[in-house]
Image 1 (cartoon, rainbow, N blue to C red):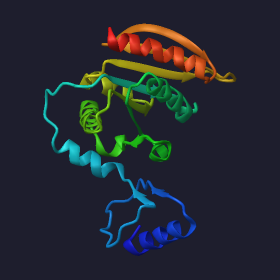
Image 2: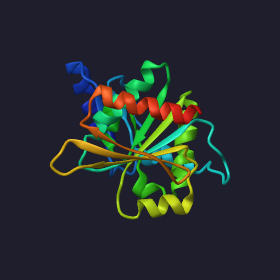
Image 3: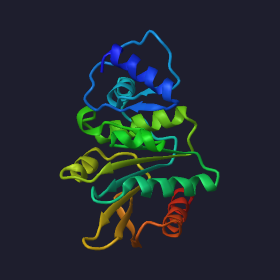
Image 4: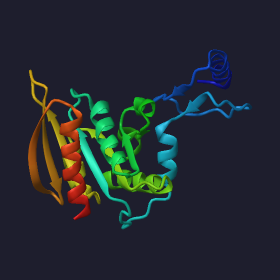
Length: 213
């Protein structure tokens, strides 16, 4: 997307009183715009992430409770994260959420381009922690689609996460199977019978208990 196109999109947004989020995954360069628009928000995951990776140092530990969620691509992960985040918010926590889908920015979450930018899981965890620290977050949630090779990469690099949730859908059912892991040890398995406020809030209370104790 060039500067001329950006200007036209911004003018249309102003004309119709709308806000536009551009979350292009294939954009390599973001042009410098000679104008300011409150309606237009640019986001390209590789830019901010790479900037943080350049500052990365080995051996840094996390300062904020960190939860990694690996999800089945068949489930409605955005609704799941929305409900989970709202549970944290209701108890007064500032919950910073990032995931690997660009439309996350439309759901008030951050977009992290994992596959093309980060070669090591611990780099991604460190980057998220740094960014969340600047946002004064109380807890970090990183959400990635479970795929072949991810588990091996995760274990090989031993990311400094306090809690991991593995979510798996059940074919022909709304049930979601959840494995809760800490330090590579299985803490609990549970099944959600569909996504609803009560079920997610119960899951949140368990997550809070594990993080606090």
